[in-house]
Image 1 (cartoon, rainbow, N blue to C red):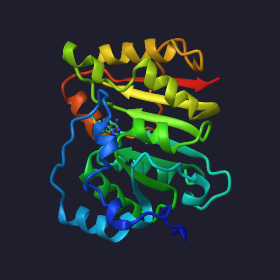
Image 2: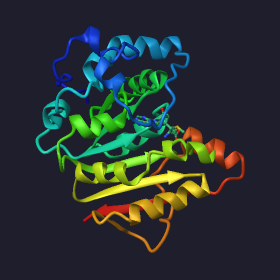
Image 3: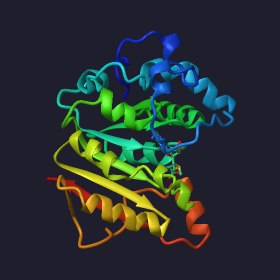
Image 4: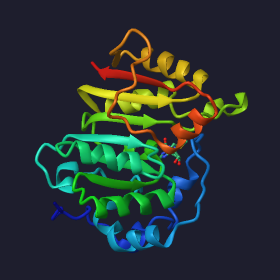
Amino acid sequence: MTSQTTAPAIAPDDARPGAPVSPELHQERRIRSFHPRKGRMSTAQHDALARSWDRYGIRVDGKRQLDLDEWFGRANARVVLEIGFGMGDATATMAAAEPERCVLAVDVHTPGHGNLLRRIESDALDNVRLAEGDAVVLLRDQLAPESLEGLRIFFPDPWPKARHHKRRLIQPEFVSLAASRLRPGATVHCATDWEPYAEQMLEVLGGSADLANLHADFAPRPEWRPVTKFERQGLAKGHVVRDVLFRRV
Ligand SMILES: C[S@@+](CC[C@H](N)C(=O)[O-])C[C@H]1O[C@@H](n2cnc3c(N)ncnc32)[C@H](O)[C@@H]1O
């Protein structure tokens, strides 16, 4: 199954992963949850980007709101946003298992976009779209209120040093923004292998009047969540993995 839809019209030259972003976005004074890094891309990932980026991907430019129904080619598209998909193998596996849902996967890490596009092609996935850039800008400037039916954040950078805690993605301001983009009943699912961050997730999500915990404490690990690359690394170090599952009220 392949999609007949194309990404919303933007000049392809501006849209390539790795191209400079607009100066306004660079000038924003905001603490970011990521380190800009390029990483090396394999030939297969590079080729998949060249073949399929214009069809499935957009760069986060903060300029225009996305029409998700048009982009996914579905009426009332049920869209889950996955922030920080890394190499995207878990994303592709979850999307293949749930063809009725659409996955918008965003990351700043370019080789992952090539790898996920490779999986979209090889697995003939028509329910995945990619964004390259900062998820905060995507949520704030390009996604409409109540446009998402789910948010997944699996193994966000834990920023373990105290002086870096402010870089953690799951903070009250971020949660308030994210909740505003979720439909009532939508789920927020986070996982981490860093215990203090797991506690912070419970505390911050639990402190939002827009969200309700679906469990008394941490959630049991759902069987459908594939083990991700970072999860595997955490498990190899003996870390305990925690899932956190909330619902938009
Ligand atoms: C530790 S990795 C986890 C990747 C993957 N989920 C896994 O479990 O293997 C965190 C990812 O989040 C991405 N990231 C961090 N902050 C982000 C943001 N504000 N917007 C988009 N991606 C972000 C990083 O680039 C990185 O790829």
